[in-house]
Amino acid sequence: MAKNINVSAYATLANTAKIELSSIEAVHISARRWFQKSYGNTYFSLMVDVEIGGKLIEVVNVPFHYGYGDHFDTVALEEFSKVINLEGKEFSNYAYLSRFCRDNGIAVYSHASDVKRKKDL
Image 1: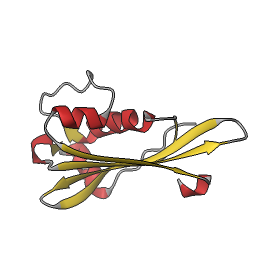
Image 2 (image 1 turned 180 degrees about the vertical axis):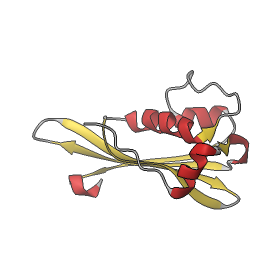
Image 3 (image 1 turned 135 degrees about the horizontal axis):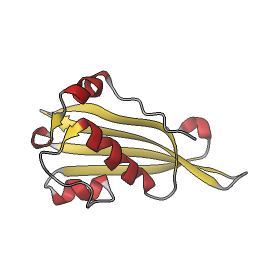
């Protein structure tokens, strides 16, 4: 299934003028996973918000994507790097957004939950 990436209006604006990494106080990663019993596949939905000036701004929204375990964290890094000015930081050395944030001194809050129904993604 092809990726269907939706970003908020602010993030769309940010594609032309990217958000500066130094202005980010915290990153919030939220994922929901669903296991498709009939075929044995796992899918997830993903949201990444950044905290700037005490306000949360949605920068990544992936409504449906194939992947199991913590693959959502890898997809989060890929999509995050598209809307954030990494200020010369090399993200290709990282597999997970949460690890990138920790290594660069940014508070990160990551939560993944398993849901029973596809429509709960």
